[in-house]
Length: 284
Image (tube, rainbow, N blue to C red; front, side, top):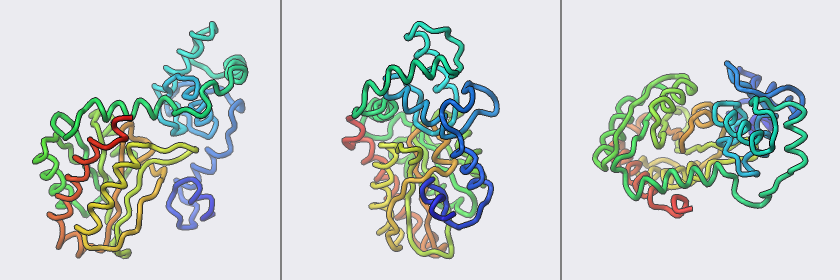
């Protein structure tokens, strides 16, 4: 169980809770097992991830490979059908799958189109935070830290949206609805001294801008908090998987380190985000 959780970017607690069970169900789908189309609730599964991967390799922007059949995947599928001279119904059935298989990975070895789009979105904002919206979220117990980080980001020119909700999916939905440029999440882990910063990674895909931001935040925030460096990690937790912008989640403990070093850590995180806007990843 822990091996499966690790491979899927989940918390490795050895418990088959709701997220692990959902991941087990998603892992059972293979492309061609069912019709794929936009519906509510949205279809999820490894078959959706494979479809996103194939469309992206052919230059059709199905969004990041998150195994969720949303609006961007539906638009990319329809565009593929249109370009292939097929009936444009937005449904991946036998005929569409056959066309995908015949074309193959025409861009094998190149960057998926979603990588290019993500880098370009960061680059277009220019260096610095002026004009950018940043969501700062937490799942509880870190109101003061979120406010301090928000102040540091506003001081650097950003517009800030503070989010609080124990449900990561709810935070992701709020950030998506607000169309923010980047999401910073914080979670308190009182029983584990140290800091780790997670970015989205799953289904043989990772967010390049998210990984770069996680690297910079981790390097700046560890000495500011004065806690052990537990490294960065690619994960597919809902708040990282379901956000449509670069996102990171910082898990820090103990509480005393947060309280004593809050302002310094907030300043370090703000500086890391400013640095991130001018990194090579943003330049493609």
